[in-house]
Amino acid sequence: MSRRWRLGTAAAVLVSALLAGGAEAQTGASPPGVAKPGVSRAAKPGAARPAASSADTSAAAYGPRFASLCAACHGANGRSDMPGTPSLAGQHGFYAITQLFLFREGRRSNEAMTAVAKTMKDDDMRGFAAVIDALPAVPPAPPATPPDPARMNKARDLAREHKCVFCHGDDLSGGQQVPRIGGQREEYMRETLRGFKSGKRPGYSQAMTEAVSQVSVEDLDLLAYYAARVPVTPGAGAAASAPQAVPPPKR
Ligand code: HEC
Ligand code: HEC
Image (cartoon, rainbow, N blue to C red):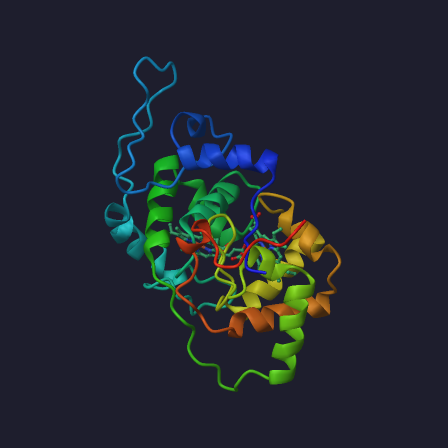
């Protein structure tokens, strides 16, 4: 069960625009792509659309801005110590840019983050996403009390039953548009999972709304407990797009 989920057709169209960056993104209709080192995004000769910006949106260029604008809440290394504020360490740039876009467009709402994202241009979203993409995963500080084996086992079963691992991976490290949730802050996940269920947090696609619709709030809280405590692996940023060792399930 380690094959990771891919977006459906409609969302895939948006996502390919997102990856490509450039012209389509300038309209604000879809998020800009994340800068990948060595990938040229110059417009084709004679293309009618404006060329993608030539600004430096590399992680190196935006690192200092992350340190001064984001680290106070999200932590200098992306490991957040602030309740309600997610860790960004080990998070995927592709997911991050999508969320920054949702905040900026007012489709995901949070007082602190909406204020931050409102000021961002497309290039800024690319630059910050590149920084986040480059932050290695950092395990949380060991909890004061060890994980309760009974709760962990029950939640592991729930994560299979409700296909959480199908999309987020067996180690919950995610990949591309699916966020890493292994090692994420528990209270943040509890809140955000309840938000998907109540409709307070609309996703970029229907994936999460559908995933949680049949899960009780009690079980969602248990899943947050579990995800916060699974061992943090370096994860799937690159591995998710590489061929999987386990063959996909038969149809
Ligand atoms: C004042 C505190 C604060 C600052 C400063 C801040 N953030 Fe956030 N950020 C938050 C909170 C709180 C959330 C969670 C919002 C929610 O619950 O929906 C968040 C969420 C996010 C997310 C979504 C993460 C996820 O797992 O879904 C990203 C990406 C992000 N912030 C990036 C940034 C970047 C980049 C900066 C700097 C330019 C920044 N943030 C500055 C508080 C902050
Ligand atoms: C069909 C694929 C899919 C399934 C199944 C799925 N997820 Fe997700 N999950 C996603 C995607 C995609 C997102 C990004 C949300 C968006 O659209 O903005 C996400 C987001 C999340 C987040 C928010 C992370 C953050 O940093 O804000 C949590 C927590 C989460 N999922 C937990 C779960 C749990 C627990 C389950 C099982 C009950 C589950 N997911 C099932 C695809 C999936």
